[in-house]
Image 1 (cartoon, rainbow, N blue to C red):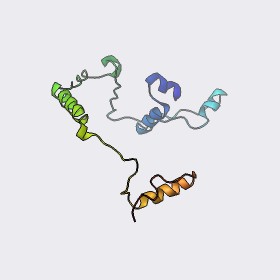
Image 2: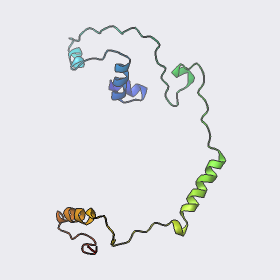
Image 3: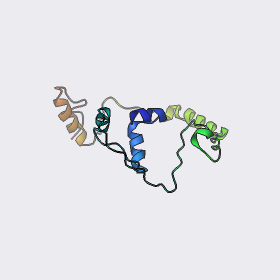
Image 4: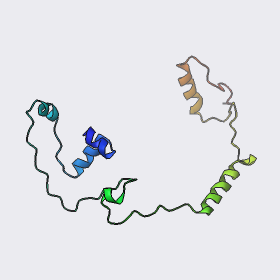
Length: 135
């Protein structure tokens, strides 16, 4: 499987999965070891196939992939998309959009200090902000 998979540029798992989906018989465990010593089992015949799937790989030519039509050109991004993206990036740089996190918070959810205490107790460290929350 690995040799054939490498030839087609896919993983052995992907090739085996495709074979199962197409009902192509695969050699069982130990087949190649028995084959190597001349005791391989006979190959089962391939099942008849109705409406075989067409498989396309990126970068393949029309000749190799048996396409009936050349692939469609990919859509290019329009300039207005870039303008909108640049505007959003610049907007995020504004001072009022800046996100700040205080060093010590005084409005934790009630479970947060307990979780920190539990986690940090295992590390023998005091919880940050321990005792700063009014009860």
